[in-house]
Structures are given as C-alpha cells and as structure tokens.
Length: 618
Image (cartoon, rainbow, N blue to C red; front, side, top):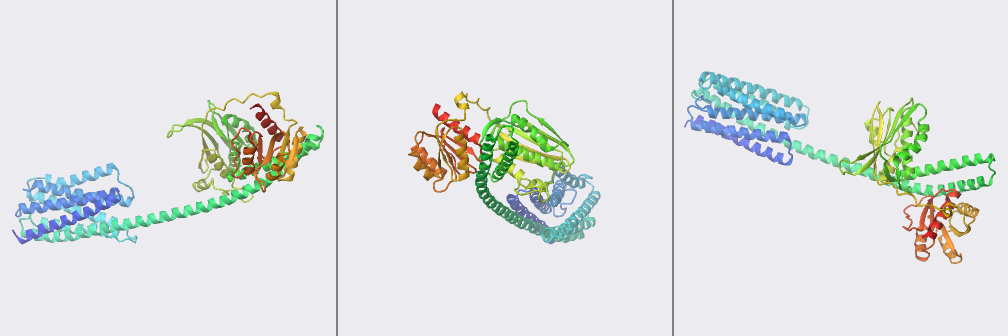
C-alpha cells in the first residue's frame, strides 16, 4: 500500500480519535450540567468521529479507488451525511449557547433535515457519473467552507470583547475549518477520487490541516466549557454572597423590629394606663353631670381623643405583632357592611365605592377590630392614590384552594389610582417605607396590615400597574359559623352588685378609677398596689367574689399572682387587665377572663358582673 494512502488513513484515524475525545469531554460536562448545547456538541463530535472512522475504513478497503469514487456510493453517502449533520449540529449548539436558551423542536428538526439533505444530494445526483460526482463534491465542500467561515466569524464577533479566551478561540477555529475544506475541494477538482497522484497529495495536505484544525477546535471548545464552569461557579458564589447579605439584612431588620416591639410594649403599657385614667374619670364625671349640661360635649371630645390614642397604640402593637389578639368567629360580609359608611367618609365624595358581597356567608376566625383596621388602612392608601377622584371596589368571595382543597375567604380592595412600580411593590409591606413626603405618612399602615393578616393565618398580596390602579388581595382560612349566643337572664343583664371585689393595680390613678367605677355600681371594693399586698388582704377579706388584677406589676406580677391564685383560691373568678401583656397568657379557666386597657367604668362593671354570675351558675 502506498505511503501517501497510509498517511491519509492515519490522518483520518487521528481526526476520529480527536473527535471521540472531544465527545467524551462534552458528555462529561453534560452529565454535570444537562444543558442542550452541551448535548448537541457531544453528539456532533461523536458523529464526526464516526465519519472519520468510516472514511479511513473506505480508503483501506479500496485504496486505488478511495471513498470519493462513485463506485463507493454507500460509504460515501454515510460519510457525507454524517459529516454535514455533525457540522450543522455543532453550529446549532453554538447558536443555542449564544442565545442563552434552548433551541425549539422546529429548529432541531430543521438542523437534522438540512444535514441529511446537504449530505445526500452530492451522492444521489448523479450516482454513476464520475465527473458530475466530482463537481457535486467540490461544490458541497466549498459551500461547507463558506458556512464554517461565516459561523466561525459570527461566534468570534459575538465574543470579540469578552475577557474569556474560549469563545473567541472557538470562533476562529471554526472559521479556520474552512481551510481544509477548501483544500479538499481543490484536491478533488484536480482528479477523480484517489486515482490521480496529485489529487492524493493534495488530500493528504488537506488532511493534515484538517487534523490540526480539528484538534484546535476541540481544545478551544473545551476551554470554553471550562471557562463557562468557572463563570457558573463565580456566579454561584456571588448569588450565595447576595443571599448571605440579604439574610444579614433580614436579621438586622428582625433585631430592629424586636427593639421596636419592646419599645412599643413599654409605651403601650404606660400610655394605656394614662388613657384608662382619662377615659374612666371622664365617664364618671359625665355620669355625674345633668343630661342637658353643655360640659357633656367637652367630655365626649375627651373620650373620642382617648379612643383615637388607644387606636394608635393598637396600630403600633399590631405593627410590632404584640397586640393582644381576641379572635372570634364572625361573618366577613357583616363586618364589611358595618364599616362601609366609615370607609365612604374616609374616601371622600370624589371617590365612588362599590361593595360586592358573596352569595353565601363568609365565616373566618380572627380579631374583627384588627380586620377593620386593615380595611381602613387600605382605604386610606387608596384615597392618597386618587387625589383627583376615582373608583374603589371592595369585594368578598368564597373560594377553594386549588392546591390544598381547603375553603378560603377572599377579600379584595381595588382602586383606580396612579398605581405602583415593581420596585415599590417589592417594598410596599416594609415597615416605615412610604412614597409620601415627610410628614404625610408613617409607613406603618401596610406593614401593620401585613402583620395582622399573617398573624391571623392568612396572606395579603398586591398587584399594581402604573396608571391602572392597585388591587390588594387578602385570603383567610374559612371556618364554620359561630354558635348561637348563650341565653341571658335579668341577673346577668345587671352590671351592679353588692359583692366584695378586690382591685390589684400598681398605677394609683387607674386603681382609683376602677374602685370608683365599681363602688358606684354598689360593689364593696378592696384595693391592693401589687400582688404581695393582695396576698395579705386575701385572708382578711370575707366572701371575696372577684379579683380585678393588672398583669404588669412590681414585686409580684400578674403571671405569678395568677399561678398562686389558681392553687389557693381556684373558686374565685379573676379579671386580668393590661395595656400590654407581653408574653403573659391568662390561665385557661372558665373563671378567668381578660379586659384590655383602656376600659371605661361601664366596661369594667359589666365584666365583673359577668364573671361573678358565670361562677355562680356553674
């Protein structure tokens, strides 16, 4: 066998080994990162390796005729189809990588069909005319060279400014692949197949260039993949760093929130004691005045101001998630109907409000006063977003969660205001975040609403678009209707009595107001400044019917006092009162209840009468 034939076979085998090693490397990367372009490149290199092995086999079988001879149509067909399909698949993988997303099925079908067509035509037309066959091969090879030059130049152009070497080297190596293809075309045009010696020498030279370029292409693609893996690692590290920074910010925010919560608890305790004194003495003074006295209006204003102050404290505690919750089962439609007049007044005359209730009742378990507060906060924000007027829609509906299958109650509040950008929506529930000018908003309204709904087991979401308004969607777990109230009698309707009641309160002003309120209803009152003093008085107080005790007190606080009473005097009903309970939870007993400060004298007298009668009838 001639040395030039053996040299060409050796080159074909070398190209096959290079392609096989490149395919193995790409498939290894593909196992670690199952991305489409890696699979396409792996299969294309495997196809090229197959074509080169078949080419070497064809030359060994017929060294005088060669693979390109028309008397080898089957092998020639396989090699040409496989080579073109591999090259187009390689280009498709590069295209998918640069686009940053996988190719569609239509694209892949087009690539496969184009490879089959490009490889089949030169062999099938005409099958048995050597001259025409040679011309077809030259045209096909020249066209392939043009495709490689264009695609390689395109890849290099897309990455010419990139710092990484891999994509630029890959583009240049693909473009350089056109050189051996042109060499094949030139050598084939000088003779029919391998019959001409000059032709075979040219094919050997082209084969050398082909081998060198194939090795360069394989190395540049592997370098590109290594650089991609390194970039992914750096991106993962950056993402991890951002996540750690976000967690640190959330931790710092949680610590600030905890500080604000502790501050809110202290403020609530002291401020609610002051409001109790104001409301209590105002109510007692109003009771002592004649019905037609003009001073009653002054006292009404004092009471209203105290109520607003109590509302601010509740809002602060709700924001800090430290507001004492009094959940009960209620119907959302009834609550919306009751607050509708207030919402209309809040929105103003230039805003039209539409209320839509579901056909069936919507029962949830939550604190109704806090749900009212959420609706008011949403209405206040809607009013600010519609300074020139607009429309609001408040709707209640029942639905079923498609994932869990549980019943839900959905409350939506929609306005036609100026809307919010995506950046504002991402921060709309953050504490102290506000788009209003300084002095026109605290930034607590929506943060409070978020805390209230989350604490009640629900979710609140916002959907907004600039110029098209905003929709807040509140979803709460549905529950069964509330049981009917217990029957009452005349004895329970009366708030007065003659029993002995002990008032345990460290704040002197609150203690005096509570004692005056109960004494005014006929009760005999014993006062104690803290739990220690109450323990001394308990043994000397005959037939004690009820104890009214503060929760936060010096020396012996409400929690310790409650445990002591439960052990020594389990039959005596206890009313715990506080402006802020902290972590204190009243004992789970039918003889224990809780009264939130600030309260009025009538609230206190009614609570005392209720627990005494309940203990008596049990």
